Image 1 (cartoon, rainbow, N blue to C red):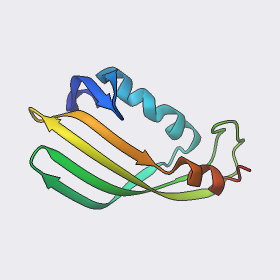
Image 2: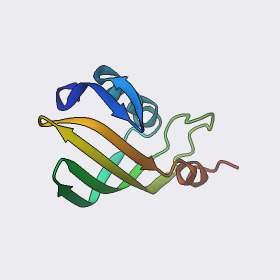
Image 3: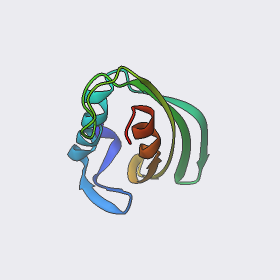
Image 4: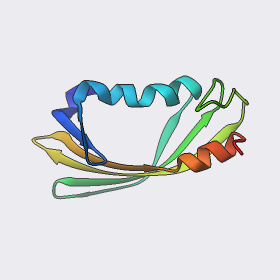
Length: 107
């Protein structure tokens, strides 16, 4: 993943080292081992790429304090990437985490 990012990537206006990108996904992939992104639409324009995903997965391990339920989730995610010299320099991401929690039975 780091090969596709500038040395200091800015995610939702916060700079992070490129090596930390993969770490962001670890809690999700751990709790939902079959986590998948299905691209619904992709719109490139100049140095920007807009993506709309449907995210799916099965809750098989603890996530944010909620024990595994075996429930399948399907939520929407929207991401805007800014590309610089062929690499991701900035990312703005909106994943409906409340929908994830609701679908796995959070109060």
